[in-house]
Image 1 (tube, rainbow, N blue to C red):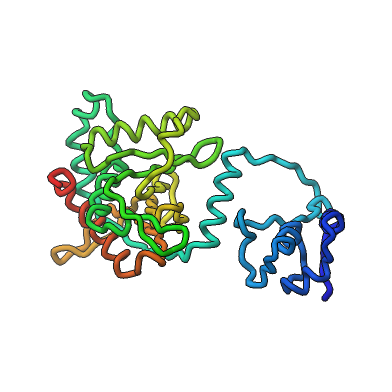
Image 2: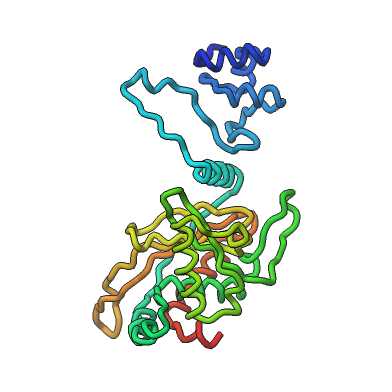
Length: 299
């Protein structure tokens, strides 16, 4: 079988004693990379076209300078780790994303009433704190979302704690510090911890013990924009919630259209653990809580 391989790949295969023709025949690929050689040595033909074992990603060894000027910018160590994890998750998790939206008129009205108190407390009460409270309540009501699937796919580890990860965009890459025991904390404390963790994440001062162990994470793009997206599930979590910018839309109420601020919600989930009906119920409960935030305060 004919194949294409760069000089570096041919040299690498020669050093390893691998016949590239055999690799091409085994994989059915016309363009070969170093990872194909490694997989062949490991006894993995890769005929299914999946991601390479271990890393979950493929580097194509291409001479880009043949097409024009190129400058190289090394990825930070943090970005490399994130790339590995996200690529592996996307390759191995049968992920589905369910979309909905929530009326946040009452949340915004409530925040406005608490503005003076927030100043007195020195706490920035953002909408994200309400999202964490709503997610916490839903994780308690839908235990499968607060679980992790064992490596062999045979056991669900059901968690009795509730920790919520908050994705933070930093110059060094994406960081997900965790607000712990959110089911035992009030709105003010959650808001304060979100601000503290986000600030220290930007300054690269988050401690290792403040990362990992989340029941579920939130990726909030509301401050940037967009109408919807598909966040990637971050294993060992089985779901992730995406939030984009609130938009005012006309809603039919009492025989007339009224302007209503609606926040788009994007719930990605591992279909091995969660089915579509449960995801729809989860997100609808979530929206109901935001639409009546008093429920978040009384439990």
